[in-house]
Image (tube, rainbow, N blue to C red; front, side):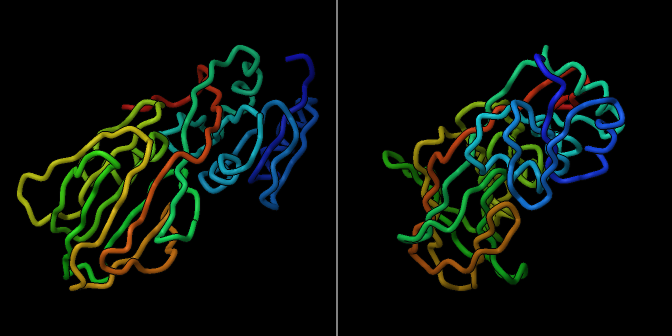
Length: 238
């Protein structure tokens, strides 16, 4: 790097650690992103805020999950010192529209789930050209590559490498041998096919209201975030 300057989002103590090593650090804890070439995002919440921001910075995730190959906190000093030689991966985010209203941007995943786990509903998944499936379940989750090692993995979906694709999985399906799907991020529509139970829409695990029967939840490309990968980055698949 031409200068010893980085940004930090999410944890002042990491900024102080780097200042002790004579780095110039611009720290943010208010949701904004420093205007530096490299930004350290400490924790999943900080990484998500940086990923949603309009920024050209390369992001080094710190303790932000395996899906983005984050660096353990105790390896921050060494990882920052090797940023000049880092390679980058691009992770894609999802625009979420319920009906005609844009309700958010997903960095990790989008979930439709019944409020009462003891009651199942029926969910439909389709693209502009194909009906993928309709199934009875407690819900369905669509995960980005960054989120594919999280809840979607526990629901049976595969872990994905960074690319413009998503993983789709039923949650607690009624079928004994359910399918899971990997599809391109172009446009994906989720619907509730029955009104037997109240269904909640969650974006990155945050509830954003309910979804009525037949009301489309449309997912489409929103943006990308460049993630730095260094020797200290955790492996994605193990």
